Length: 583
Image 1 (tube, rainbow, N blue to C red):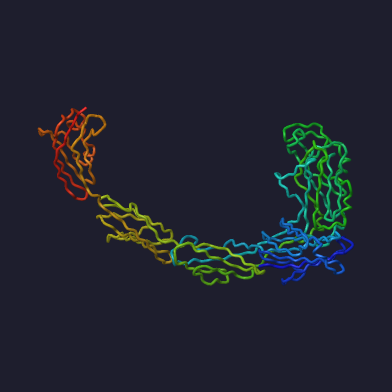
Image 2: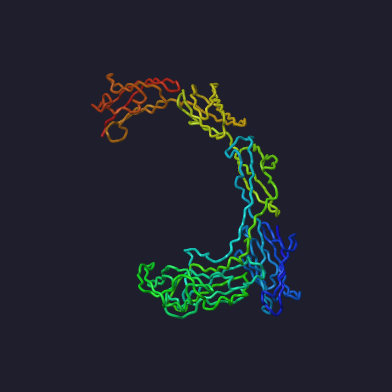
């Protein structure tokens, strides 16, 4: 939603004095009364400024420079720039400053406040339950929204952190600007008493090198300190190491009632001893104590300055070898002239919001609705509200629908029955469970289960889960139990000569339940006997008795094998073995 604003500035042709210029502001295309502040959504706004002299004559746009300062770090300036479009990135209040300078250098500025709608607080907006549910279960959507409050922070300075200080030297002048926008347009400094104090937090190796002044928005200035005078430090500088930061003192200027006189007059009167940050001791060093001082020129010269605008601190160092740092500058006005109350606002909520999403029912006056998501997945539900400015905001919650899922370990088994299979239910929302193991056995009711199968085969296992609300869902999985085919492959030649090649006679067997085998010499002597499949897998080492004893003679041997497989197949094998012992 774009907004349009019309700004009218009246100029006196001959005099640029702020007090003699009338400024009026009125919006165009927006139903806002002149005394109200423009209120916009978090969107771009188009602004139009018209400048007129006091006699009603319009300032010529083509020869006048329009400068727009949007109070968010954005400043644009050009001839004929009477219309601009701008997007405010943060929801808050802004004091826009529009400055127009005509071809005769007549100049004036106007401050115009704009309120950007504030994002409301949706804390407490929720979905119940907030854990996965069964497809078709009901969720409760609760919308909670509260306006947020924004308060204007009156600028004084004091914005730099302890890690963000400014170095001052002959090559590095110090400038700092305090931009005031919250005073009423045309408000001037009527009395020097309206300035409470001017402050610099700083340290420097030689105060006599420094020139310090404060300039008001109309260009008037006051000199806080002139160059010259006796040598004296400010604070506790690290003078033996000019790149190190010293300890800063807070120096204050007031028009009267100060502890000390002018700085130049106080230089050379005070000494102290200190240990600097680099570890060096400085004895009987001339310095200016922290505290309040009189300015070089009275603060009365600032009377008549506009309060709104840029107040600029300037610190200039005239000697290369002397250095220092400034932590912050500050300007404090007397509290009697600070606008009260300071600008603050919130954006009222117009009415109860509306829930939107899959299978959502109507929202009641408490911001509560129900929904029944009916398929697996994540469902996003949005609570949409409208504030009294017509701006829309929303907050989202997620309802997760979870299908029943089961796993089996193992999924396929070649272990002869009885075979035990472990089942795991991956579903989080179940209240009751029904396991059908697919073998016409008694059903299981545990959340996770295991089952022993008596026969081989393929079994379709089904888990049915019921939620607390009575919703049911299921999953199936196929279990395959097989028996590996049994087999025996014989070897009829081996050479146990300890050369590492074919030194043992081994049977290649698969899935045997039992085995009995004997190997005979040609005289009928049993030289090796296996009484189990495990014995057969060890093989014959070519010794009599298969125990590493006396070697069996080379020649032909006879074997008999009787075995039964896990699959029930029976084996009766006979044959000959050739034993060689060549070198």
